[in-house]
Image 1 (cartoon, rainbow, N blue to C red):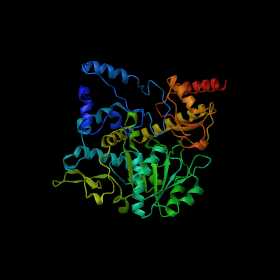
Image 2: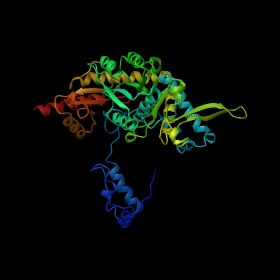
Image 3: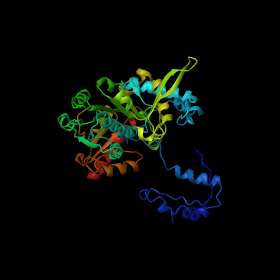
Image 4: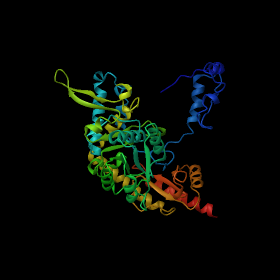
Length: 451
């Protein structure tokens, strides 16, 4: 969205004083040091001169096409067909906000209904809400839902979940007094079943991811679900939807609820957002009445014509706050609509082909990585691959950046037991020559460091 340049520097001190601050640093005191930049554009510059200066600053950014990127760890470069972008830029979608008077927003309600229907078919469950903020907030809501439904206060998760997702989860459960129990991984980088059997006792919910944070496809989903149910817990599965064309739908493997990230379909990287969280459950009253967000339904109007309505709306802005299951203020509807358009465009065969291409690219990537690093886990990977290096990974990362290549996600600060390990990723957009260039540069960097 464009903004006009208003030269208000002469009034800066006056404005700061009015809101009770002495300087810009005090105003942004809650932002870590180094992240606040004051442009100090002088008065007297025209809007065009400011545009040129800002454009010069922005030109320092590099796109994933200009700089081959292997970062992954929850942010992936997928191709988004041109028609998806075109359709969501229609004003009916682009400007639509939360439909407080739902009956006058038939187009948006129908689009969200289609999103729910497609996701339900994809994950193998009957009831889907019209999206959450992202995967992390969906996980937090799933933990709270499990505690409400089962009237227990322990939620079991793999130790190897995304560190950021883990922090969001812990934030969500703190006020609800829910205890998070972490299950170790085994030699294959998958959930340790024996450890899970101990940790799942008296749990309200058991959570597993497909693929997990290490990019590994969990082979024991059904068994994990059985352990959850034997202990009277809800079985919650987190998914990257792009894998569901090549693996069984979690709902068919016993999942009571499925969460995940819808923005991997239909949305660009966009510096990490916005996103849309998937949230689906089985069609059981106890679950449906306790799931967060909103559910769009299809009915008939007074004239017998098809109509769409907001069937359930458990947000605090729609019902009494004390009765709300969630305080989420607005869902990421546009991102959800983009995911629906992309899914509908792919169809079952297209989604399967997408998954197969990613699996093939990941296998080649893993084979090449093994030439310059040790692969710590012997399992099937999807997108992300952990690799352990002989020299400190930050050295490799900085040198790669100098060479115009963006490396992976450094795991040691979060999982110190893995040593100098980074998580690197590919998708269907990753070209073979990008992988080859990465490997040759990493080999050169390691050889230089050892001299």
